[in-house]
Length: 197
Ligand SMILES: C[S@@+](CC[C@H](N)C(=O)[O-])C[C@H]1O[C@@H](n2cnc3c(N)ncnc32)[C@H](O)[C@@H]1O
Image (cartoon, rainbow, N blue to C red; front, top):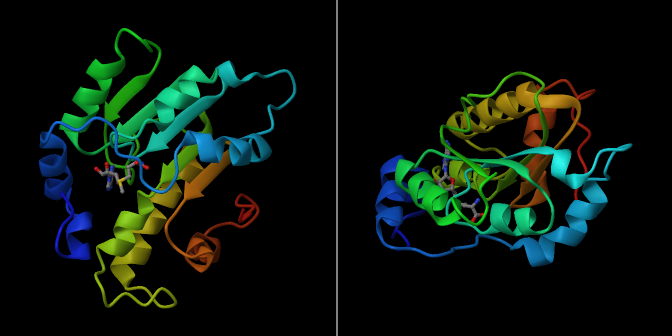
């Protein structure tokens, strides 16, 4: 159910309607099979901590299998967030018996219902991209409209707030990495060590 205009990806109603259709799995960008090698490089298990202790948040999970595949690979504490209540309900039901420790939460990534400094890893796969898509076909990635910058910065502010001081934010995007430089401009760079892989 792809919309005729890119702007539509910026609408919560669009996502709710999309997930009303019985769905299975739809994986944006790449799945865990392709990403796990990068994750291993980016997420060294620090000190004595093991995968199963790391607190992870999926920002805009949709019906991606990423949390499920990571769970099957040993990660346990994963909270998946999406603002579409129906996909959260479906994902919660799909995993209730087989992966009981996975958590599913309806929320906006720009207003995370999570305590400060409580998360080791935040993962955004194609969710911040939606803020860019909402600007439509006239988007100039070098000079995005104020609404795009504001939405991205609201998400980044929340990510920075909930991450522990040694936490890690992974953004898997369709976009060019110059877009990922946006948050660097408006946030304390001592807390954001940007790496492009
Ligand atoms: C392009 S899909 C990516 C889904 C999934 N991360 C993947 O890689 O397959 C974007 C998802 O983000 C959700 N989303 C968009 N804006 C959001 C927001 N402000 N807060 C929470 N979820 C949002 C949509 O409902 C949708 O499920």
